[in-house]
Every structure is written in structure tokens, then in C-alpha cells.
Image (cartoon, rainbow, N blue to C red; front, top):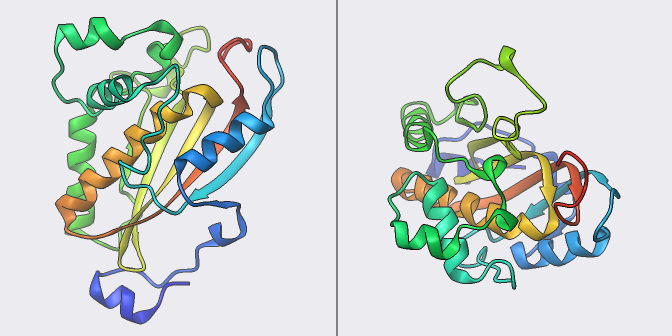
Length: 222
């Protein structure tokens, strides 16, 4: 529960965060190991409705290198999804279909979305509207088509809010492949860090909601 002292330092609404009842992890590396443990490689097995809280969501603590995602690949995909510039050479070096295709491409309109969140929380710190929607950038949701891979983004929304004098975030994920989690979480961490620096506030914990969790991309219609 937030304290009056914390709320006074940074204008925050009095609150009670029920994420205290979910599993807590020190960092992204712990979550990655757990997601790999509870899933099964090469098949249709799905874990449903995973929720976990990451205490340290700083970009460096959220950089988890794997065989599929060395540091260079993680930094490239984060750079791309943040809407920052990248070179053709970087694309040729790091872009692989195995690292996620159109479903994991979040860059369209991202800079405008981030600017909106910053403006929202700077103008009205008590707001519940600091949201970064991922799909339907150029068309309404009435055009939803389950066969369109690019439209069916894995991450659906990031909700940012000020609580306990800190910037916190809840991510809602439709589909998470355990082996691609490291790419997503490094991007989320970088985005949260960027917003916090613009608002001049510290970063709190991150809550990660996954509806469908599989080990890898071999499951049907991920």
C-alpha cells in the first residue's frame, strides 16, 4: 500500500496494489529461467494466465543474453521497437525470423505513443490513461483478423502509472514464447526507463501478465 510520504514526493493517488499476491522475481533473468522451467519445448503445451512481478526492471538488469539473443541482438530489437534509428548493417546482422517476425514489431507510432504517456503523467500524475497500445496503429479494431500475423501483436498494452513516488508499469501480453521473453522485457525496461527519466522519477516494479505462454514458436498460431 502506498504511503502518504511517498505520494507527497511525487503526486500519486492513494492506492492498494494487489500485485503483492503474485510471484515476485528479483530480475528478468529469474523470470526467464522460470518461464523455461514451466513450459515444454517443441509442442502445443500452453501455460495460461501467468502473472509475475519483477522488482528490478532497469535496462541493464533486464538484459538477459541467450544463444538466440546475444547483447547485440537485444539492443538492436529494442532500438527498433523504440522507434529509434538503426542502420541497414545492424538489420542484416541481427534480424532473424527465429527472433520474432511481424508479431513482435512494435515500432510503428511508438515515439508518438511514448510522448503521449509522458505528457499524460506530467500533466496529470493521477491519470489512469497513460497507456501504450501496441496493435491497430493505422486501423480500428473492427478490422481484427486472426490470420494477419502482423496485426496479432504479442504485447497488447503497457499501462504506466505513478505509485509510491515511482513510475510503475503493467504489461498485458497475449502470447509469450519463453525463449523470446528476453527480447520483450529488454524493450519494456528501456521504455519504462526512458519515460521515468523524462518525468524525473525513480522506477518501481513491473507486473507482467501473460495469457498464453509457450516454450518456443513451434506451437500453432502463436
